[in-house]
Length: 210
Image 1: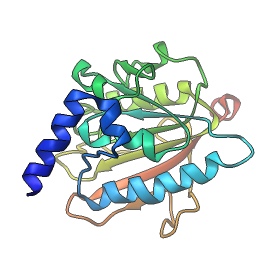
Image 2: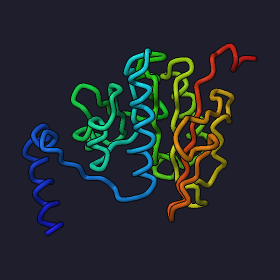
Image 3: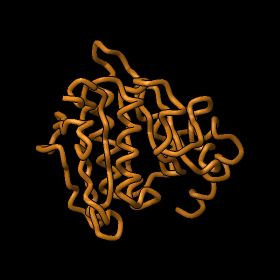
Image 4: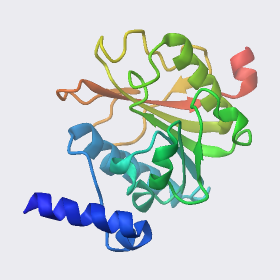
């Protein structure tokens, strides 16, 4: 029965993604870190969106079938970026671009986003420290001053063979969001994936220079 249900959902998506969305179709990954992202973290972002600053804009790096429903979970205006042109079908039409997270400043205006979420890139294409630091520079460029960077990765030697420091270049200040259970900027999930979420705010340029 589950296989039949999955086949129906996939067929409906191929027929009409818009219709599938209206029917509430999702293809979620069943993992504790994904549940934490989709519930606690997204709830925090939605609460912020209800504040005086308004909904703002969110950039999600890396798309796939299992992230297709994310725009329906978030109140901020959802934008996405992925290197693989095939993943464009899972982005919001008109708000998805094909390109690299290490070159995204060429695709977006400076300070365009309030939030950037980079979950699952390290060890899955972003495999060297130089590339990671380049991504930090690009996130700094596209985020507003004080904008939020949310980094997620599997903290294992196979997936993170280099030190993952959010403040490696002095571009970001570690931040503890008011999310239940989060007590430090680096929040380990303690699951079989050894997944970690890291939260940081974009520093002002004069603070970086100092």
